[in-house]
Length: 304
Image (cartoon, rainbow, N blue to C red; front, top):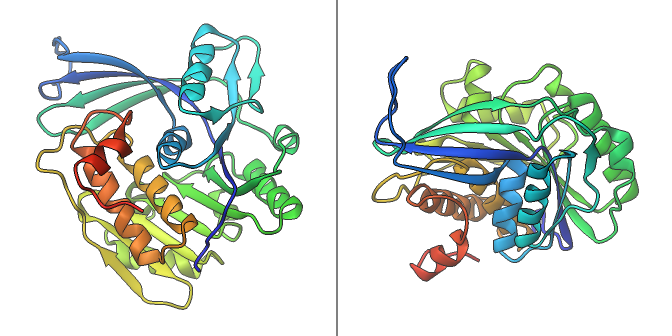
């Protein structure tokens, strides 16, 4: 079966404090408006994906860097609430937890993010201290390319049967050095468009020509998703939008979790991406990630 795997999922990436202000519609410059609501939540791409994967029944671990502040302690408590292990996180004295200030438009469901971060990235020395015992899958954010490449190499060296996935959310200097290392590449529309592609089929074909990954998937928002299997055809999976789009924040992270979950459970790539599309579409019709999977199943969404 395609990329089937057991064991825990280790996610490598950043974590943020997200401050989300919902507004009636996005303000014009220099305006002063009142928020309809405000919430504080844990953010970060891999961190969000692990939250969904935990809801789907997987044992999850997160590794990254933390500040030595009250917010990071709150972040770790929130991870623990979802059953996600953070025991290998690296704490840096001083500094502050990264923050994302998010404006969420009720009119469109779109979100605008202003991010601030001054913590160092996770390095390969810290990753070398992470036990891979019991880990069946490692999912990386596509950042800090040189160090991330060495982390991937270590995972392969010390756990030869491990599955490795890489998220390419946006272009970064030197990110191409990572393309030959993962089994699965999950690319975002912003990354593709920054490379000059305006259609997912052409992008996925190009990406597949530049990697040895067994599966490449491009999430294209309201246009659905496109996938290519090594030596196979390019396949498009239509979007399944909700009746009303309320919140697109973390929809891509939900999609990535849906793909990883389905592949680990033995689904073929087209079916796995179909499940991910359904789950991401359902997420766009509700606020936040808490209780997402339970609610999806309760309302009849078909998941593995």
